Length: 262
Image 1: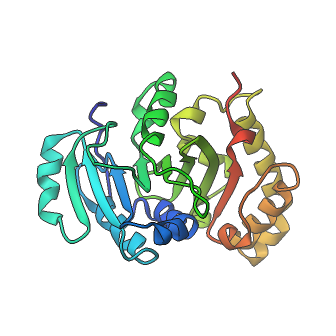
Image 2: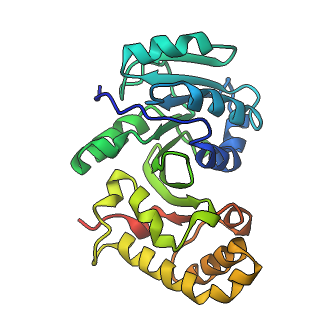
């Protein structure tokens, strides 16, 4: 199910997303009763992102397995020689031809070519494949987002079995002029909502103002300026992470605060 993407990919393109997943979801992956299964959905014309995902997940969950899923059979054939212990490739789309429930689905740069009206149905289908929440786990995780060609700027939405939870903005701080530069990397569910009257537009406007107010901290480096800007921003917006993640050039906000208006 789905259509073939452009397939553009580069080594380390998804490193920011991978590191965030490892940091925030690694505990749930380690606590999984069986070997946790992660799917790299729509990995593209080369298998690098799936190979890297396995490596990064295994630093926090040594039993993790990764399955790369691609709708183009030629891409699957090209990736097959890279299979190894814990890594496999399958032909498929949004139906995800992997048995059982999944602990993680990563869909990066996949939905940008679809219409906004199609996103909710894709989310629902993918979330239905996630492991359910239990007493010590919030359940499986779907991470869907968009980044630039070399992974300097990235915005993703994290969803659980019940739907969207958070939105994360991540960037190489040295490349950033202002936070609203990240608007061009908003996922499909938000990119057309960056207009006056929509929450995501108000958020980016306030973020730019907080960034400007934090200008004196620039003498200590872009990281310190970002941390101060996010701290100021959190007075008015439900920021869900803390300085440990801000130092990475990230900020995560509750989905409800940025969700499109009907």
